[in-house]
Length: 165
Image (cartoon, rainbow, N blue to C red; front, side, top):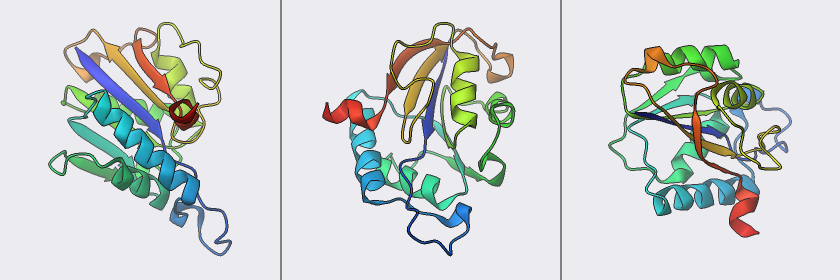
């Protein structure tokens, strides 16, 4: 059994107009959302064994605010910055860990989520995959390299608004 936690970065700050896109950090709402999502992950005992994270400032800041255990291996990859679903899928298929978290960007996260699940969750935001949206999906496989499309069983799909509603 393998598990993927697929998370889009939290809300970024657009006020620093001179910054390159990759350098934009989180705004105050994004900081709160990432912290809340980390609390939710811990409450559900959802801890990845490996994290694949885009090198963008906003993904790094989201990851830091999740408050994951310090000994979880993290790979920061420039290839995940604005990556397509295909690039993310290739990165995932190269992993060995039982539970992998990918922390990246749209539209790649939304497309990958749709490609992987057998039945999409009945959630108003699944198709748009808003900031800090998180999908937890299980696969009945032994190796990530054998990851099939359209066979993932959704365990959870949540967005920050769900934590305050």
